[in-house]
Length: 197
Ligand code: ZN
Image 1 (tube, rainbow, N blue to C red):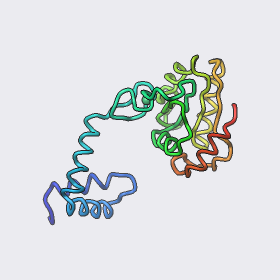
Image 2: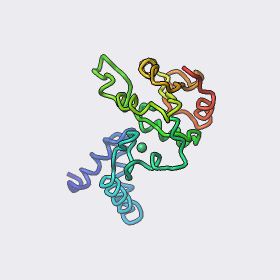
Image 3: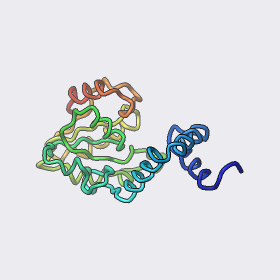
Image 4: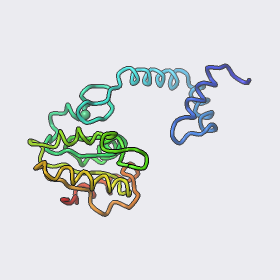
């Protein structure tokens, strides 16, 4: 043993984060330990505060510390437009690009029958409930992957009788490109050039 169990536990937890293996986790842990007052303690407080207040928004399925979430509460948002995304990371990407003034709907993934993920495993029934007047448009901002596009196809069929217009991101979104990896300009262009389905 070279350090106490608390430090070992910190390293092991950090190593579970995406993009951090054991080596980067040790580096990150050391940086935190060396900067106890200006980094470690504020981070620990921020994390415990976020953990205590975290909720899944009952409207859109996003995660926030207020319920309903900040976006769903925002009176300045256009509630006639629902932008459908696979994951909260996609919602964050669209918000960073600053091109959506509607509200969102987070599916929680894409259809994947081979993995046992059908409409009931995703927030699809709730989307169908939400997609009615005063909502005018449902914009499917799904990834340009095979799974994302087959999910879009399924949703278009399910929403056909809703009386709400269904649109999708412009084809120009690179195939296999996940929204979170697109730069803000590309995302903005894809939103502006959306096409009816
Ligand atoms: Zn919400």
